Length: 590
Image (cartoon, rainbow, N blue to C red; front, side, top):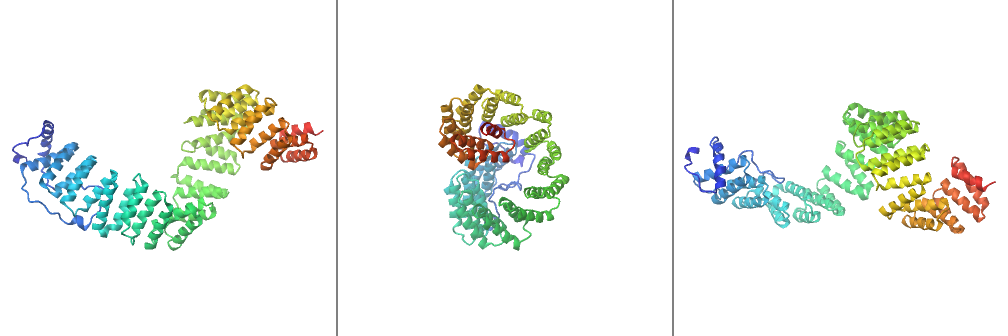
């Protein structure tokens, strides 16, 4: 074929240089018949289907194969192979336009689509559609491209044409259109288009399904539920429609949603995917025994599935069936397929539930990575401390490599808590202070450092941290309450302290601790009636020993000594280790 080419047609210098290098390759391969695309080059699209319209042969022009035509065809094909996409698209489009051959138009459309130039692709598909009106694929691709370009009206017209001309495939086409529209950013516009396209096909279940899915995506669950019910009435055995109906009902009428799933499973016990959905829905509704039974039914058919064993174990934990949980977790561990770190973490949780700290520490220690690593190490430190192994707990915290500032702050807070529990208040403050040097605006660190500074008598530092916290977060009720209560407890700057705790109560009117602070502030101010009223309210909501001590002292000062004595003694029986109650009783009652 190369010998027939006598001369190179006139072209730009760039094209000439490209052509010269490409023709060496082209001569080594006999070209296919002009207009025939390679077997591997079918245009790929989400809405491509084969129909009678596509199979019907288009009308071909009567043209003589000239050297120039052959050259242009070769140039486009080899250019495409060598990565010269723009040259390939221009050449194939030019050839298709001159010859009016639908086969060349199809090839031009494919090359334009593959090049990523959607403007040229639209032009090419329009040409192919013009030259071969029966080519359903051209119409489908054109609609898809127009949708991608945001031209909804043009896309809708093309989709409607496909549905009308290829009626036998309408169910499948409707589903494909729905899938395309699901990714369209304007969900309301996509829903409107789908409803209009589906309207002429009220007897097709797929029509209602498509609208239901787009309605769900647009947030119109009422419309979605109505449409999916119609789909189910037309195809009663459609498991996806059952699943969607149940999913929608579970949001607003969970018992109805469960009944939909249960009813279908009664007639179709082999529908395991739906049974899993039913089991998960039962868990969400906290119907744990029923959920576990459903998971176990699926597990019997999949005995080697570690995920099912793991799910059964977690439900068993929730049901306090510790033995059942342990057997399932160990089964998941033995299978070796479930993430081992996750299983070890929950075995640690199980150990804590069984009050076996050693088992829990061992399992937490075997968590080497994954999403539960941080939590496992923190629990491990807590348990070590509970076994009076504070040094080991602190070493574990120091050795852990945090991956965020939040984790760094959390580690410092936990270490400070362990030290505070051991009454090492100065050391706890030092840990928090050191962490604050690196993370000066971490609000939780500021608060805890302020509390610890107040505890060891560094009142000015405590106030500085709390004032900074108020600047960072003017709505932080705890900061106002902490500073105000510090003044009131030390019986200094009483008016300022009352103003601070009152502001805290305005920010958090239902906070019981702040109610106690306000009541104590009124006591310090000599407003005994207001103090007793506020402290009674706080104590009724939470009979905490500190609140009881404050209320008892206010009642005693108001002259209600018998009630105060009874209240304090009853509270001490419930909280015999309360130092504040002991101190108050010793001071008030001879």
